[in-house]
Length: 99
Length: 99
DNA sequence: TCGATATATCGGCTTTTCTCGATATTCCAA
DNA sequence: TTGGAATATCGAGAAAAGCCGATATATCGA
Image (spheres, rainbow over the protein chains, first blue to last red):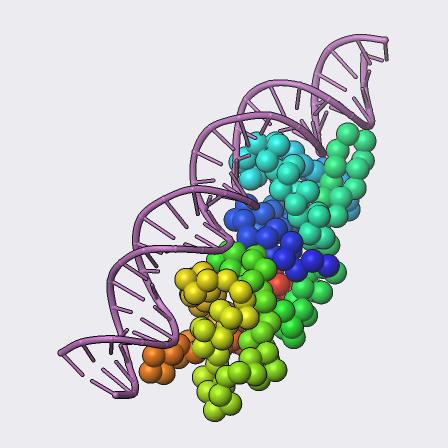
């Protein structure tokens, strides 16, 4: 777990927003089919809400994933992203006691 | 408390090192007079350990201070910096439950 | 197999951050 | 009050990040 990479991933407004949206997928992405939420939210939905291009959003999601903050699942032609809550718990404890 | 500003402050190796050093001032800055530690560590000591120029270290410290992660005390011609532990506790809880 | 759709990657331009040297400011001591 | 030491601020060049359009890749449906 590379702290520096995590903090870099977190130092962008849009990426913070994405993480926040993924906290409550059903509330923030009402257009997505309900049965898909168990895998997370697909890139297109996030792109739409972020208001940036597909390439930018795709890159942001891989930055978050490389930092370990989200995980992805490929289902057919869609890639679903969801938060990796364990990473947040771990980071929280790190900040509480260490850095 | 601006999360984005905090994460930006934390996304630099040297600044993370400084925060880590300030966690244990006596161990990390043995040259400094013992009675001064109650105010923190002065810029010159940090500069020496960081191996960067005085201007860079001074700027890094004000970035950390603007983010609320450290606080400073001026004593004569020295400025002493110390961690603001409340900010870390607050950030820890934010990451645990929110972002 | 072929076209359409979703996502990922690439190349490049713009903005921000990093880091320095030079200079300004503040404070002490002689 | 003047010189020197500690710190802060300024200006600039180099490196990194932000963000785009174009293109590549993967998968589905006809």
